Length: 92
Image 1 (cartoon, helix red, strand yellow):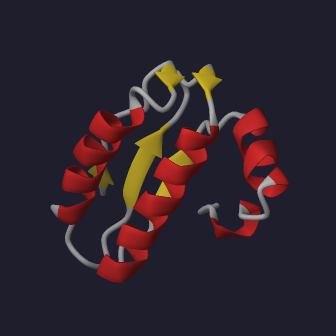
Image 2: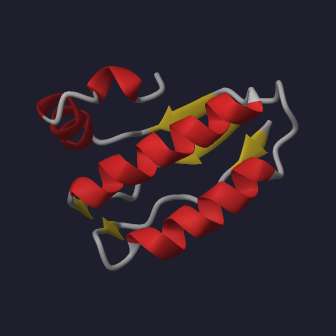
């Protein structure tokens, strides 16, 4: 099992590009068929950029046949994804 860099406590438009780059690089190093975990337990302050980041990582995981597992995803973030109509696209 591979572990992606944990999401920071703040993930907004300003932080998203660097966070996405780090997580995506780790995800691309994950062998096909192996699960990858992303810990979101520290995430407290976020905007729609966090949803976009998760969707981008889910897409890369699908392309690479990697099971992306989201750990401790805040309920508010899931609700935001549902509000935008993309909740079903998030892993787990």
